[in-house]
Amino acid sequence: MKPFERIAIVSNATKAGAAEVGEQLREMARDLKVEARLSTEFPAPSGLLEGMDACFVVGGDGTLLNLMEEAVSNDVPVAGIRHGQLGFLATFSPDEMKVQIPPLFRGEYKVRRRSMLSFRDKAGISRIALNDLVVKSGSNGRLARFSISVGDEPVADYACDGIVFSTPTGSTAYNLAAGGPIAHPDAQVVLMTPISAHSLTSRPLVFPSGITLKINCLGNPDSPLVSSDGQEAFPSPPLFPIEISVSATTFPLLEGIGHSHFRLLRHKLKWG
Picture 1: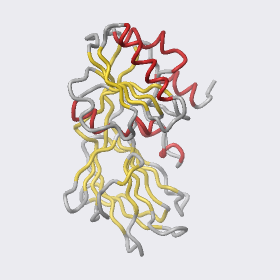
Picture 2: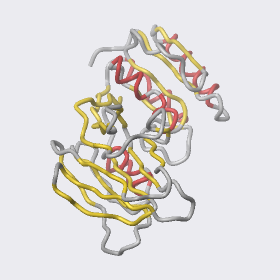
Picture 3: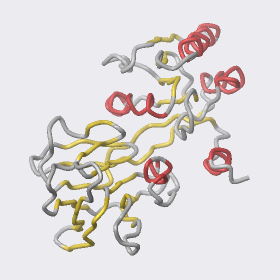
Picture 4: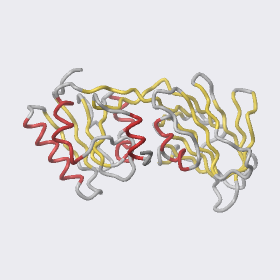
């Protein structure tokens, strides 16, 4: 792959020690004659990734997700330096940076194109998500009722706390906590997992790319809460139904040559 000439470094200064790790990374870049632009602002300033060959994010998965739209619009691959809790996206270790990072600067890396979700409401407001879209009850302690369809064909009605629509990347996030399956990141699918469903027959489902799911409300007393990648999905309460599908847009995730998804799962989930 092409060696790096210009990189951006984003350190989430709200996390103890992240700024120091970012500064160490900038010094490594300087020693290797790579121009580095460092930001400790969170959220990162707009335009930070313009003209960059790559971006290194020091923080957890949430810090990386905050850069998602900027990375996609500039097609800049992003590498996560782990400085959070469970993070599956931030795969590089601060303790091993001196070994792991220089090969990346020299072009020894791969860019994994992670699939994303595309969703829009009845008003036509459209967004994308790297991890998930979550539709939850707008009332504390009360079940919500939703209907799911594919095109004009009904799939199921649910009485539950909410529903998680997940990408394979997000399958190890909220989807996993809600009891959903883990999908390989190369899969082109949408995972749908009900949250605390009122019926034991309400099970997670997996849908292929090329179809459009539709979620509608069934007489809920309050407007459902809709979030994507942990943030409000729409600037105002959306108009239902909401349509969800695998997006034509992908997220460029930077990985080392020796990265293994299964090794990561074994380590993170204590599988042995």
